[in-house]
Length: 442
Ligand code: FAD
Image 1 (spheres, rainbow, N blue to C red):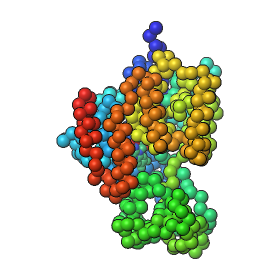
Image 2: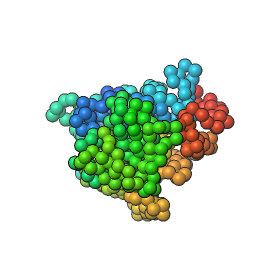
Image 3: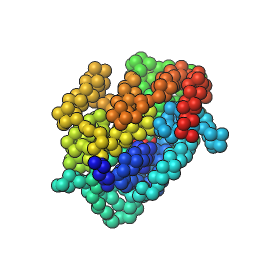
Image 4: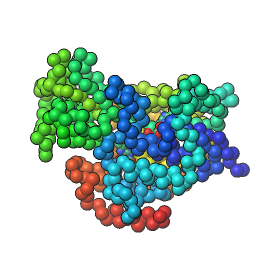
């Protein structure tokens, strides 16, 4: 029996939405991609913060992308690209670096959309504002043209694939006394360039890749940069190697009305700015209770394999929730799986079995002593087990050995050469293997 072609709504035309659109169409379905921006690329569509960022520098400020001007990828391009569409660097590339600037990633995603003829599937400047389950099990999707007040459109789809990203709704650190502290607070979501911090004293909270990049960016112009890292021992107060104006501390203890900020190490600094590089929240404002999921402490639950809400599977799915991963290949494999499940070619287990499997997700979290908000954290080698499981479900080869080794080599190199890992490495033999492998696609 040929599988039925379904009419599907995809929310978002970032890397995940593009991957989903391609795989759904390959499977014979008819996807419509809703994208509130005027272009594809999502995160990689660098944008100056909206004017609202000036009045609400801790908020989402109607800007989707969280990229700063100096951003270069933190993964080597060979690792980062889709499995069958290499992010290779032809001699004609504008930015052929192994860890290119963000503009090069956007060009790659645009090439992907062109190569697989995806532009025609996307409704640009169209925001999904509601997704509601109808009595017959289909989904009413309400959308509106961006900038047009009042006018809303409702259409019915067989299933909805959510690809709205999770790096645009800021998560803020709670600091005792912050309300009365007179300085400026902002979130890295609204950080773009260092110049506004000229001669200022800036406290950067966080230890993620963005916190590291942004603190170095700002140190080039600021008077002082103080990094508050909650995982550092309470007594930490260390000048950072290579910098005469940057220190690492433990977490902030409190902020005070006189403008000072006191760290757990006891040091008190008069600061101008607190920059929250404290991550982001999952947010699905268009979903109602009938989606059957809830988001609590940044855990989206209950989801089979981080993709399908059990009670409405497979008609609602989420692509791209896991973090600490190589995103694009994971999106691709999740999308292939969702496409195959929707057409009935790939079977899901029973609800009870899916629920039992979810318990393993909780167990993994608990055995690591992780808080609930780490539910979708795939660090510790888990991502490749997950990718390979998806691949097996789809009859796709597992993730290439060179990609796994290169990912590990990059993590090691980053730890050993935090300042220069993007320009110095020891894994040229893996680059050669990757480029050999890519020949079959180029
Ligand atoms: P997004 O790219 O966020 O796309 C979501 C899309 O959905 C957006 O276009 C948005 O406009 C749209 N949308 C949202 N809500 C709606 C709605 N209601 N209606 C219609 N459209 C909607 N990954 C790497 O591989 N390498 C890196 O070096 C790297 N560096 C990063 C650096 C930073 C600072 C950040 C924030 C992320 C980085 N990432 C990196 C991760 C990056 O987010 C992923 O690579 C990927 O771009 C995520 O794609 P996505 O499609 O899931 O989400």
